[in-house]
Length: 302
Ligand SMILES: [Zn+2]
Figure 1 (cartoon, protein in one colour):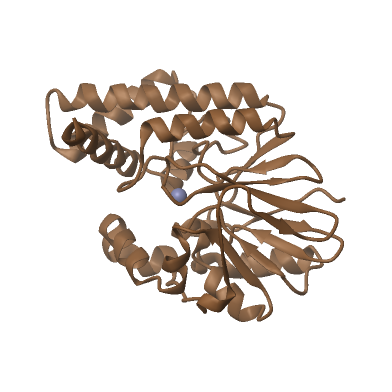
Figure 2 (figure 1 turned 30 degrees about the horizontal axis):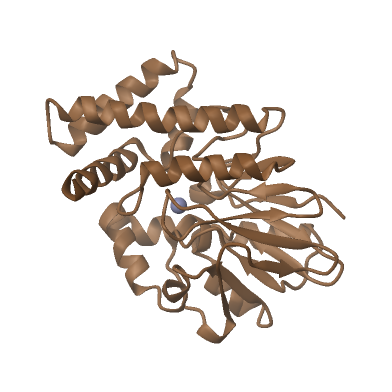
């Protein structure tokens, strides 16, 4: 079986930050992730270049707009395709109004410019998956593994033909050409313990390679190294947020302190361009807000 094909969605006009993946079986073809609707033209071009004239499955790791925003538009374009999504996320692809308004709390007036809208999907065409469910592509299957933490509704998919795991945002962001993990910890659902448990679950899958939506294969880095780095980053950010909150409850101020600590920690290894590209995927501010929400929730629960 062929290797999956990486398509760069060129989200927000930037290369190498958000991918989607073509997986061809002997009978059926899947697209894993869609990018946002605003960059769909690049996905369609990528499909054409990959010789794909019909999709049978549109599979998303989770429903955030940079992963599933174009799913409805693609489903309309490929009318026989089914859409596979975590069961918790499924209702929000059928009726994306809550998904949209929830994202608007983060992105405000920039919603249309950034994401380009989102089209609903006929519920009849949605397959709601739970962990362990398989998508049969003919001689090749994708298996869903529940990997919450970044969000409750998050699956990692393993391609049994190559052993490649498509980890969505479960590992955080690690742009192949930058090679540094930034956790992806958005409000309102981010949960530190779940996120770490999911990374350990992915480690235990023994995949041949980890392919991150943001962005691409992590080879030649070993899986263990990427998993270790991802867990360390999650724990470090938690400490930085807690430390900053000892002196302020102002979100902008906390985020500024976290950014300072993160950049010190990396010892100037990030260029301004790399930081700018990572900010497009999960910003210091959004990550900080996600940690604050998580810490408050935990404190409240005692
Ligand atoms: Zn996400």
